[in-house]
Structures are given as C-alpha cells and as structure tokens.
Image 1 (cartoon, one colour):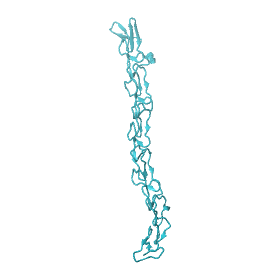
Image 2 (spheres, helix red, strand yellow):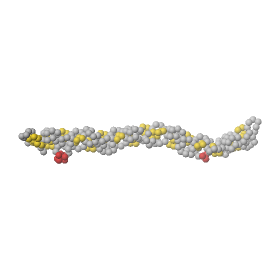
Image 3 (cartoon, rainbow, N blue to C red):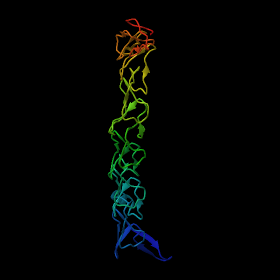
Image 4 (cartoon, rainbow, N blue to C red):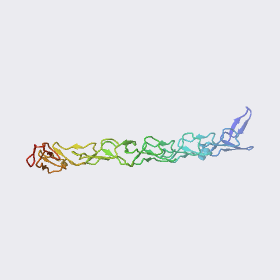
Length: 294
C-alpha cells in the first residue's frame, strides 16, 4: 500500500504513509507496522512499540485497515506487556485501573479482595472479616471470641475478658443473668442456670439464690422470694416447692427443715418460723409441750 503526496504543482512523490514502514525508496516498498507497534510519520524506517498497558491493531485489523498510527490504553481490569496488540484480563485477586501503564495486574493488598476477573479495583473486607495475604479472592470471618470493628482488617482482635462477639462483629459484656468463663472463646454468653443469678453485666460466674429465695428460670438477674408464710434454708433452690411453711407459734425448726418440733418445758416460741425456742425468764416456766408464752 502506498500514499501519494504532492510536493509541488508539477510532480508528485510516492511516500510510505504513517502506520507503515519504509523498506526501500527505489523501488518504493512499504510494509504495515507489525501488531503491537505503530508509526506517526511518513517514510518511517522503524515502527515504535506500544507501551505497557497499551495495545495496537491486531493482524486482522492491519489487513483490513493498514498499519497502526497510535496505540490505545487497555480498559480497566486489563493489562498488556510492551509491544502487545491485545490486552489480557486480570485474574481474581488482582486488578488494573484504567491507563495503569503497567505490564502486569496489581495484587489486592491484605485486607482487600477481588472475587471476579477483570477487576478495576479491590474491595475492602467487611467488618468481622479479614485476610492477611496479597492477591486474596475472599475474606475470612473472625473466629468465635474475636472481633473486628472496622473494614479492611488484616487480623481480628480477641474479645476482652467476660465479653463475647455479637452479630455486629463488636464485643459486648455479658448482660445481667448471663456469664462467661475466663476463656474468651465463647460465641455468646451462657445463661445462669436455675437456682443461680448474676446482677451485674460482665459477670464471670453466677451466684446461688440465698436462703428464703429460689429461681426456677434460666438467665435471671435475681431470685424470687418464697411465698408469704414459707421459707427455705437451702441456698440455690430451684423450685417454689422447696419453700416450706414457717413453724407455727410454739414450735421450732433448727435446720428449717420440716417437720417442726414443739418447744420443750422451760422454753417457748411466740413467733412464726423460729429456729430455736426462747428460754423462759428466771422464775418462770412453761408447760410442755409447745408453749407459746412464758
């Protein structure tokens, strides 16, 4: 292929146009620039290679249109080496921004990932997820007992003592009625069992219900009082049935366990629920058994 250029009004000179390589002047021989190269001047004796991140015409286009006079930048997510006629797509875990001028795709940095090919950029790991290697295609969830409050993390932090990792990927103290062991490996806090309670948040243990109380439910911050007229001397009671009747006037129960015993001679009980009978004042006595007054 040749190009005619008028040099004056009388004669014309045959010249190799841009996009072609001049092999000889006489006779004139022009050859299109090879794929991955171009020329911008007439009668070029050499073609220039396209730079990294660029491409020129393919062989089929050269046959159809002639040699290239310029190079085009690769689209975002694609790359090319020097002297390329085509751009190649980045694999997952790598990316290439538009007009990167790089001969290779860049790897996603730790804390980011790309799970699709031909990516123009990487995405940050979400809260509660991390990765610590370049070129990652996904992020890993924090293990139970650890958390990550920010995006783009490269490692998770261990939950402080007596806390747990919640669904927001933050750590929270165990609420009242719950507890955690000294280990930080719990996904969530454990409820206090029946007969026990915890009043404060962040408890490491639950406490047994005191005398006169019971708790028949899990995860409670307090215990229930025995019904009026009933009592239990046990700690950690789990049922209302464990609360028994107070001993009547004139009787006592040393260990607060039924049955109640009548007061012996010389003693009396003028109140309900006594654990011991009172001694009669000096100079007085009481008839047995079960005296209610001295």
